Image (cartoon, rainbow, N blue to C red; front, side):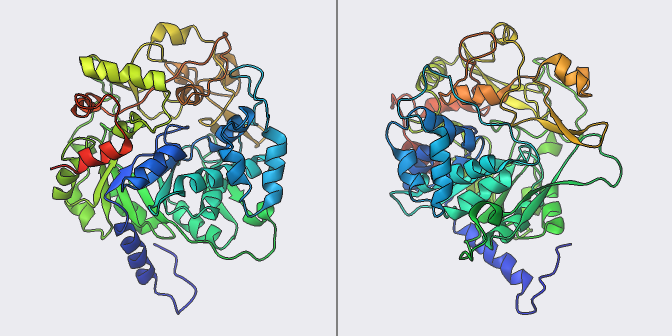
Length: 496
């Protein structure tokens, strides 16, 4: 049950109603948060200007800011917004550490930021807080529409610091999935008052009674001086079932204000099939069935607004969702390929040409992601979908966002990833069977956004493109538009 508010003057049910009402005032269309630079500030701004909830991806924002500064920040946008950060010493430290006026010596030759663990260094915290602040401020400029940030429960170490930086920038909504975000609502409540917050870290091999937590104290970053309270953003949990929605409302401290209900045909990470028997179709994809469809009637009785995701980025998609009782829709694929997205231009053009010719395919890969969740991969040349190309790449884990914490023999916490070198993973106690088919999505996603590192075998890292199963339906936009915008996407979805 939810913990009672200690103040007799506050009615928890009234707070819940207020949060749900704020969620209902959000736009009917949510632009999906697509990872590592695809849903960057420029796309989120364009979507908000078109009347949608613009959403920036919170994944790897620290690294993106460091890379943009090392590329010379040629348009000056990063430094301009950094100069507005309310704690100048942090911005000065980050600028001094990462800014290269002439850019890197050669493409991809970035100086690495440390991989994040359960105890991020002060330098890492500075970069995390500042990077999400910069991204949200840029996304909010030039319009009055709302902006949200999307984070993954599976990538736990950066989340609290990234959320705090976004709140300093006035973020309007937080969306989180790829796991069960039970502790985020209460953390938002605490950080709005600049109080410490923590999240439970799942550590493989933990002994009974052992609990590990990632703790973030705002005053350790911005100092102990009194700070005015921050606005607590609306929280939308990304779920796949009404059962999970009900569980979150019953067991979560703090308000869950609404839900985004993702079906298995949505792009990016998918939840495993319920029951997770391991059964696969002839192509080797997980098989989803009736149990994987949320009961929308039951969901509607929970008293929270919800948006439907997966297959609604088509003409009439919004009307279809509203007929099912939804507040609106979340759309990723169509926005990912619009003119303003951060998807590399050559990759965007290549896939759209395949859409035009009807030759594009999307594979739900049950093994690619180190998280263990199925991951949608667009089958297109020059990406990790080409098995021969990817298998020639030596294994490495040098970014580390999808690593898993594990208990070392001495009780300390270590980190391992099934996409790292086999000998290293097994030496850390990893199951050799977990190595099969795993791919380094961290490097691949940054390459997709145009910031590839050099691979261990030489040459830039291969990109990966993810999209929903409805990718071919982008043809509804393409016959009349050589290139389409975020505004075109909103108009298409809203059309009769």
